[in-house]
Length: 145
Image 1 (cartoon, rainbow, N blue to C red):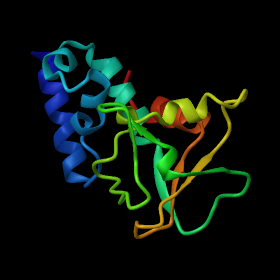
Image 2: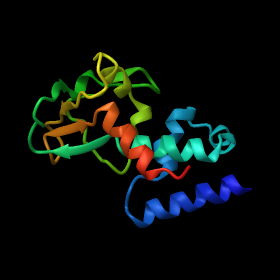
Image 3: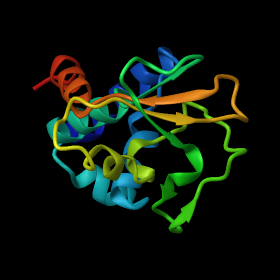
Image 4: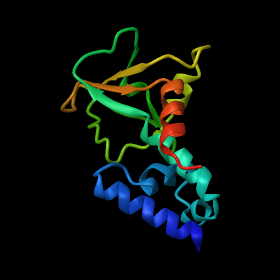
């Protein structure tokens, strides 16, 4: 019961701030299985949610030192299909766990690499994937333990 209340509170806070809801972020992690998500320890769910929330931002410029890829190199895990060049970035629905973004980060031996994806059809031409270090720091700061 405590987990359900915590999850509901997290979702209400997220909706109030117009941020991604934890359910939107986390359901792909659980392959869409709501029961498995609800059975997951609340503290771990909150941390993973914060980690996923920290993943992205959009930009009109490429951040200094960022590695650049086309959005069409990203693969959707659900159907193992590449995104297309006309993919429209919507940060309220984009889940780090629904795509192979982690695989891009793991290509580099150090966890401090920022990765940028060209998104020509979106309002902003670049989707920026923060480094693993930045995502981890955000999760540690923003998830209650």
